[in-house]
Length: 348
Image (cartoon, rainbow, N blue to C red; front, top):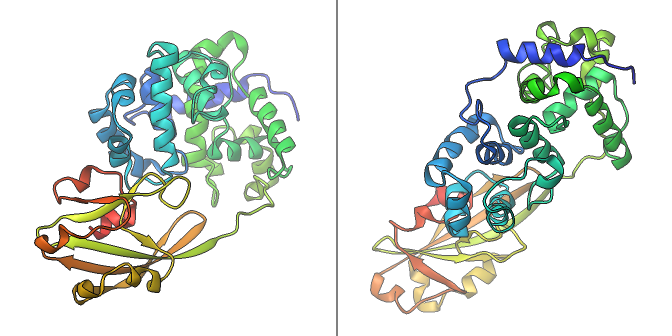
């Protein structure tokens, strides 16, 4: 890889100041709590989706102490619908670790941050560079695309050794040591902004790119060739039958899903592998209350869930003597605060 003299980083910094994203609620702050929260929420999730969740989350949990003291159900309830729920569970564990191990203060180096639950190398670097101006590279999906195109990195990122080499390439692009303390936060934000605004996966805006002069891919006329990754995750599918048991007073039967498994840790209708299994769970005397609901598909990143629903509406006095699995009747004013899978929340 050809050497960089600091001009690349300077162009990124100048562009970010004039044209980058500077209005998001987690920007223009050195509060590691808000930066950490936004970085976790933005993993595999678009900014437009995260905005409302972020605002609600910091309103309920304004600091790491309030998050650490919350129950996991409270956290999952606010996270419900954002997906990738392991992020929320790790967020809760991480907040507790910060309180227990670091007296409520986030570590100020990437290496120390990476030791916390749910914080990987790129997230740790983002917090360290944005909040503490540490000279360290990030490498989220957007930045990977920028770096591979700029340096013409065509090695297969399906191989761990090549990913390590890309980290080295990203580090070589950082602001020079003498200016890093002043430029790191804006440089890091600028690299994220370039990937989100200009250096898009398809139809990249090379004509508006501040680092086109440096970019091997743009100068070769084939930016969409990068990044290279041969191994693709195969899509799978799963059929699930759900029993939506309700009372005529509005309560619904919910149980917490086991870990691991689909919707782990979330509250859900009783779930079955087949229609026969579901129907066997409903006593003969109650089957007159059953109503089929049209099946639908819930699309996850790498899996399609084919959901088949039976609705069972019971008189309240009958429901008192009925139960499924280790669950409970939840009133209609209480279930909105629980952590629910997105399709279950939508159905309710």
